[in-house]
Length: 225
Image 1 (cartoon, rainbow, N blue to C red):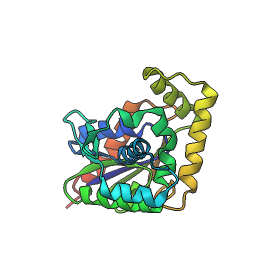
Image 2 (image 1 turned 90 degrees about the vertical axis):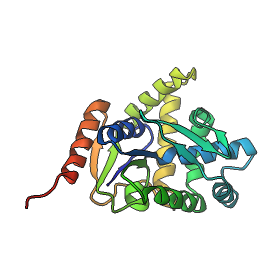
Image 3 (image 1 turned 60 degrees about the horizontal axis):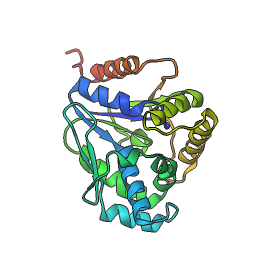
């Protein structure tokens, strides 16, 4: 069974997806971490985030590897380097939507993601899981929240990392990423056919997890004989 959780930046996908995967006892696939890893590697090697062909080549030559952990999360490797912490840096966040917009990059990443999904059950999070990567997912969720709430969450995360930005700066970046993600030519962010839309603005992470786990349990339950 595949549970696809899509949505914009800051909607809480990672926190929720990890918890749902633990609840269901299945794997957790953070596709955003794969794009972040490529973005980090590009910045490290001086590859222009606007250079689609060069980035696609980099993606094919250096596939991101997700190393799962028993309690969720796990490590992210690329080019034989552990990039787990580095991919969350502000400079990576600022460029990942630009990097992920290139069709060649998405082609490489989608192929890798589909290969991972061929075996076992997964909770997968990203921007295009239900629309492009796995449109036949048993459960499709579009997790969102208001731009202001998503900016508040992002600012809190940055503060924990010692990065201090104003509310206006973070909100502007959230809206910029929304625009890039929803208008790109390759697999733009949108609600997948048949997806359940959950607005988490006024919900706790636990409440969202309960909703999604309940939907998954309904799919898993055997029908009447």
